[in-house]
Image (tube, rainbow, N blue to C red):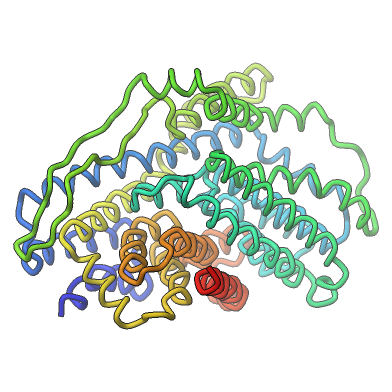
Amino acid sequence: MTFILAFIPIALILILMVGLRWGAARAGGAGYLTALLIALTAFGAGPRLLAYAHAKATLLTVDVLMIIWAAFLLYRVADEAGAIDTIGRALPRLTADRGMQALVIGWAFASFLQGVGGFGVPVAVIAPILVGLGFTPLAAVVIPSLGHGWAVTFGSLGSSFQALMAATGFDWQVLAPPAATMLGISALAVGFLVAHAAGGWEAVRRLAGPSLILGVVMGLVQYFAASAGLWNIAAFLAGLAGLIVSIPLAQRYRGVRTEEGAFEARTLAIAMSGYAILVAITLGVQLIPAVRAFLGGLVVIQVEFPELATGLGFVTPAGAGRTIRLFSHAGAILTYASILAYLIYRRAGLYKPGAAGRIVDGTVRRVMSSSVSIASMVAMAVIMENAGMTDALARGLAEGMGSVYPLVAPWIGALGAFMTGSNTNSNVVFGALQLRTAQLLGLSAALILAAQTAGAALASVIAPTKVVVGASTAGMAGKEGDVLRKMLLYTGTLVLLVSVMTAAAIWIL
């Protein structure tokens, strides 16, 4: 009975979002209120416990939203200057080969855009480009959707990974290597699937070499960057490396050229300058101890919480909540980069009058809804954890799944991403659950959590909200079902790959 009661808030979100097509903000609010009521009436969570749970949730929410807001701000700064459009127009000049265009634009460039923006940006930007190059509208949506999924966890400048750390209390040193390994291996499969979506099995055979090379390069760059502490720019660096490597590859697979003419190097360099600044600032803060110590010590937000107990005897030990080092936080680094990038683009004359206002307005309008959904789902997850509801779910799963749980873990993450539309939300809702289940079964928590975020990343691209956005940009409004049907087999294959990797790693190790 406790398992069923604890599962009700999650089931409600699933029903509202998938069945009734509610948005994540409304569904998250309903899930939060339901969890609050059940915790209070069935799990013995008193007013004192709930008050502290809300305080903990506030810290976690601020921690995650600082990155989300600042990441999209940087994207808007570059987009308003025409930088994204400039990069997008330069890429098709590399090759006229349809399959190679899919790999370069729909995979490497999509991964780059996910690294710096996320929030549906890769498909929204790339689908119209592919349509203009002669791809069918369906292929134009499917290709970038597939192409950026592997980069979601460390994309959006690390917001999803930050959420996983916040929800579980694990540091990046523990979580980054296994997560980056699973996603890097998935990237190898993504290349072949993108080629298949572009030209069937003939394209897969013909472009096996470029697919393998790009996959290895991007997977390794993301792995080494994330494992070195640069997790907030790991997907960005991987996508950038993919774009660099794709230049000589595209020259070999040029196809029949229909457009000549060199793209002005200075224009492209200015467009990329905002992201070069981001890399420089991130490296400076992460790798120069004096800078990191100075910024990290300016303002530190940390709250100590007392031991909390429910009426049923579930105890949450005393300890500190999420520590936020305000001026060295990933969100702060993004803000510094946004300001400097704005100044460079303005000096280059790339802004029209009123650009600053449009940047701020566009940022607020785009992230407000997702911010509300994240806040409500974080509150729901923290209430469930402190009331013992997550523990009840974990015990039920441990007893029901047993030794096969490693095969199931990625699908739980995938379910969370599908129903909430976000890898971030999935990590918030299911991160603590996956951790507790792994602990009860005596499994590697790092591997199970890596499976959680990898499954969620790969499946986030088929969330109904993202499918709608992608279809609308390619002129497929009303045909979202066609996109979803096409994507299900591809996405299911990738999540199954993570499932097998997780089980093999745990059973071998």
